[in-house]
Image (cartoon, rainbow, N blue to C red; front, side, top):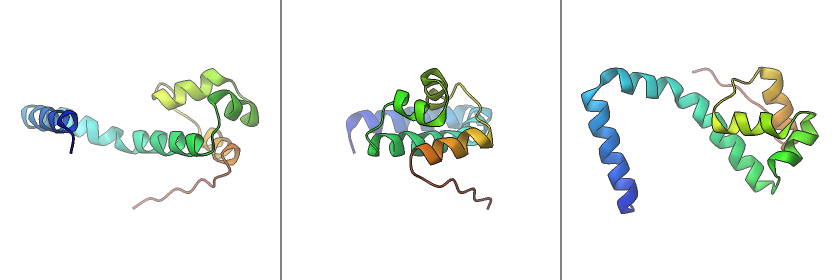
Length: 95
């Protein structure tokens, strides 16, 4: 484990221990950021730019950028079009 990651993990642990609401909010956002991370990974593995994905989806590069930065709350239709543009299938799992 790198020093940077160890420092980040320690800081995160200290913050969560000192503020239980922060941990609750962090956990609530986890599914959103997991989805974003998987979408970015799929785009990079496909060697596509945001602009190329946007063109295939019929949207703008700024929409893709806002989604990837977490500043856009996507609709299911957006996510389906995104997964299709990336050659993937969107699956939702509620456990």
